[in-house]
Image (cartoon, rainbow over all chains, first blue to last red; front, side, top):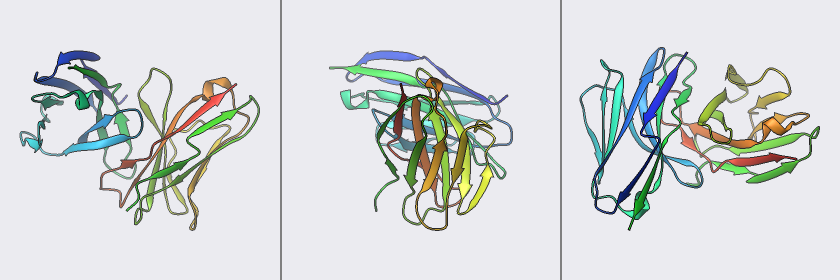
Length: 112
Length: 113
């Protein structure tokens, strides 16, 4: 059965700290891994990773995929209170389905 | 360019009633996906539709649930004879084609009394 496991389940840090969120996956016919940020409404897209070892960066956020170890990390440097959210790691099927397999998320709380 | 729109944002139904959830994809997107998020759980895939076709409905319960995406108008997720266990947030996502990123709507929160 497909599964995506995230750790830690929750994390409390202070502004300015650096955090690393972990994600391991088992997805049949794997196509790509995505990270989303979910606040009180819709998940918003952060990154899509298809190739191993290539870091993707967007401001203070970066992510990398290891397809051999079936693992990805999301790093956030110099955290701000606005980074507080649930971060979702998602495996995407290839083939006709294109469906997403979601992890349960990591709840990040950044305190002032 | 407006994002994915869903309505209603909140829906309250009594057991046995029908719930209709609507999703208008982003402009230019012809692929629609429905996901359900039960309380304290992650999002789970329900169904994937392309205009007028159901591509994959493997995540949708066989009874009481149906989905459509007509040539004109929004995609509809229909739940007949709702039960308390149907209470959840239902998210719709759309993409421009099968390969591309899915963008999510704000969700419809269904509460069954």
